[in-house]
Image (cartoon, rainbow, N blue to C red; front, side):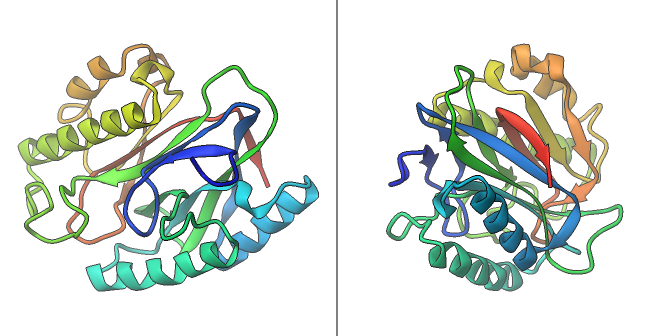
Amino acid sequence: MHPSGRYRYLRGGPPYSSGVAAESGYRIDRVQFENPIPWREGFERIDAWLGDRNEPRVALCAIELRCPSPYSGEGFTSYNETYCEVLRSWGIFDEDRNPVARTNVAPSILPPEEQAMHAFSCAVEGADTNPSFVVSGGGEVTAPEITNETIVRCGETSEEAIGEKAAYVIDLMANRLEGLGFVWDDVKETNVYTIHPIDRTVMPDLLPRMGAASRFGVMQIPSRPPVVDIEFEMDLRCVARQLTD
C-alpha cells in the first residue's frame, strides 16, 4: 500500500508501477486533457487540479503520456529518469519504489511534437462501493530490461507473430489484475495500442478471456509502444469518474 493509505499498488519497474487500486474511503477519478499538453505543463495542471479540490500531491496515482515516436532504449531510460525526478520531488515515491501507474505510447495519428501528457488519475476522498483501479500499459517484453532477446518475436510483424505478442500481453494484463485483487469481469475499459489489425490476431484470444468486460468492447488506439521494436501494448481501467480539464 502507498504510505498515504489512499491506494495500493503493484510493484513494477523503476519508471512506474504495474497498477494501482483505490483503498476503502477513496475512489480513483480520471482526468483527460482536451488535447495532449507538454508533460511538465501537465504536472502543473495536475497540481492546480488537486489544489482546487484540497487534495494532496500524493493523491496522484496514474499518468498517461504520448510521445512523438518510439524511443531508443537509451532515450527511454533518460526520459524516465527525468520523469521520476518530478514524482520524487512531489513526495510520491515509496522509499525507492515508484507507485504511480503509467501508459506511454506514440500515436500514429496526430502525434505530439514533444513528450506530452494525455490524462492522469488520482485517488481522492470519497466512498465508492465499486472497484476503482488502473492497470499500467504493458507490451510484449519478458524481462525488465528491453532487448532484442526479451521482446517476444522481436522484429516480426506477421499475423502469427502479432498473435503471439498479443497472447503474452493478455496474460500480463490478467496477472496484473490478479495482483491487484481483480478479475476481467471488473474491467470497464480495455485499450489496445498497436498499428496492426487485431480482428484476426487478437480478438479471438482476448474476447473469451474478458468475460463480462467484453460488453464494454475493446478500444484500439492506433499507436506504437514507447520503445522501438515493441509492437503491441494494452492497459485496463475501471475508474469512478471520467472528467476533462
